[in-house]
Image (tube, rainbow, N blue to C red; front, side, top):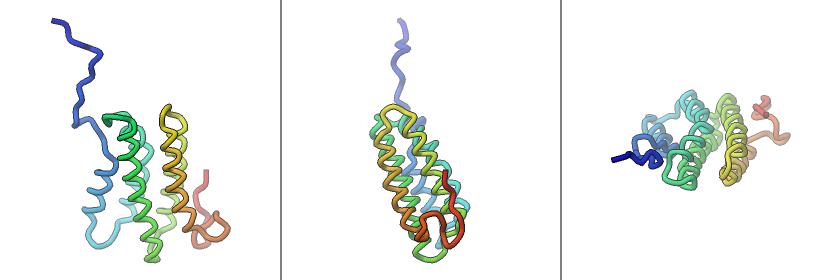
Length: 144
């Protein structure tokens, strides 16, 4: 009996889910957000865009789990801004992540919707910037 080499077994252990990862990270935080950890998680967004879309049952499902995770992280960034405790390094990490995700979404066939999600998330970040759109509280923000 020959093995069907064309059939790839669906193994849940091989799937990634940025949304679940982000929720686990956020739940692990006590009463304050560790912005170094937040920046690390944000920095993983482009990698999760690739892995979620290639390991999920469908590319659409993968884009959705990635988007939910990325969007939640940016919501935390917005909340930190509202509290007056957002660090410039965190703004820079989020800006860089948007740029990287935009590049990934533009480089992979079928990820056009990913660019729409990046545009939405970047819009949230843009509203936090100073009036000139290039600085945050007077300091230059990462721009590609």
